[in-house]
Image (tube, rainbow, N blue to C red; front, top):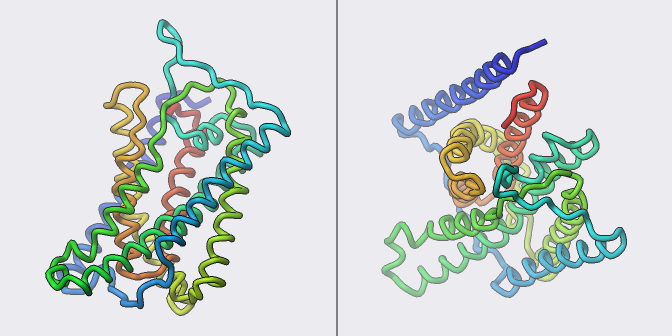
Length: 313
């Protein structure tokens, strides 16, 4: 039987290997930049056809569906078990771990599959469609109109890239959450299932609205079939470069910050900047989807590897 310290050494070795892959990827990108080759080629396109009212409508539908479906499900199946309160003296402190991660670490196989599907498929699809495609796409349209009206903005670099920063900050802010102590992880199942259905329906409505009402083409939606292999490569390279350092940063912040403080927004701000820059340069949503899904998938793989080894995170 493997000793705990041996399992920890194996896990740390896997983490070190990922960091080595990241370093090698950055060296490769640095060599391209030093040779005068583009790290990420810029692709021009026309401004997206949707406007602020469409952004507001899409986000409203997402929120209403999430809240409404959860309220309806809670009435049908009854209120979920109450989360255990954090005990101050001699008890357990709140856990900073994400609910999906808790399900992967402590849940039964079906709950693990639910959490993995949510993390690797549904969450990346929803967040990239609403944050990157709809919101950043509109903000880039707005920035374009500002540059047309104000000649001074045409020469200012920030006049073009501020939508990347704004969406990255909003993306990080969406992941601000309190730490909570939950003794039975099944308490997370009902919210997760309702989120899954709400997000899938909201994405379908959003894409139908943009194409049917605003006349958005596949190009407007950031989809280009001839570039699928390029988009796959961009997403994987971005994950190899950014993923391991951000996971190491998250582990470090968890160790350094006081218990009960969730550090997720800090690494996710950097992730949002990277994903936003990819969208700004390519104006395609597929490399962002690959990047987001692969980034979450790498996190999931580490969590499941830790569970297999019996390493406590």
